[in-house]
Image 1 (cartoon, rainbow, N blue to C red):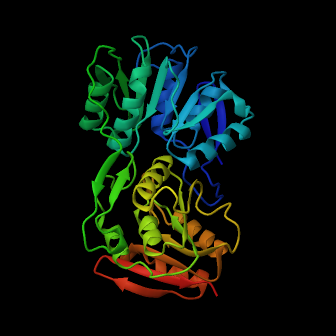
Image 2 (cartoon, one colour):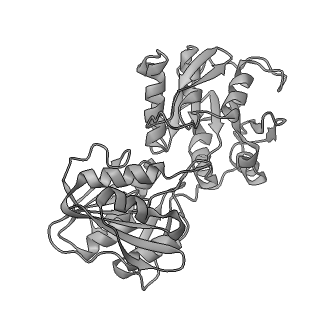
Length: 389
């Protein structure tokens, strides 16, 4: 656990799931800069921000902003696309003696507050997600709403500022402090706004197995929301051919096209779509229902991988694990997915993984399962199969 010094006191914060070996902090310089500004800072030459109204925090990655504000007596509303961020916030509130009821935790799929007096935005990695959420929140702002964004200098681009300008109102930036910058935006209630382009739908190409020609629904922020990425395309061409009443998991489901293809190839199966992103699970449900029908058996779960899944209850897991956590490259998420899959699989059950060749997932799978077979490969990707003995 690391300690964050805020203008209102010291906080102990961790990421979620907590790992004592993890040296990554649950906040960054952008969080520190924003909290300093809210309290009244010399860097921005502004006095303390009035936080007495409805305060909304968008994109708080591990709950640092929400915990700091709640600990100072303000009851912020947190809006996030991440289940892990919500869990981290709950744990950090508890760790610092803040009652859970002091904050309101919403997902990006929930209805936002009707009126927002202060909007704080930790700029997300996905510009599309920022666009989508600004479209959702802008009608709730008023002329007196204080809008402040924050992010590392490398995360705030001209396109970021143009989004605020186009959807919310006149925008300017602060000087950089510790490689972080603030965004100040003045809501313009008369600003004409086009309709949000999200969710985005497109049809898949032919020649990719059971998914050929299907229509995919993509909410903002999911990986490759505007096109079929080449890794998934390769996976779809090499999915297992299964039959019978099986329980299949599309783990890290994204827009759900892999699990939908598996369901269409085996109509007697039940597919569980799992992702830590609320946007992804909503996309998966829309994709599945449009292509498989309203009565097809499926379950849609937002969560931390397969934690909470009954042991030995699954026959097949299909997985395209991420290897980034925000700005950090890590295999921690993949390892949790692999270990969770082994626990959830029945004896004889199989885990199929698509990954870049250089990631070396076969080494981890052999260590965990005692076996790993290369099902298909090309110069960039491999499809791996491990069986629970």
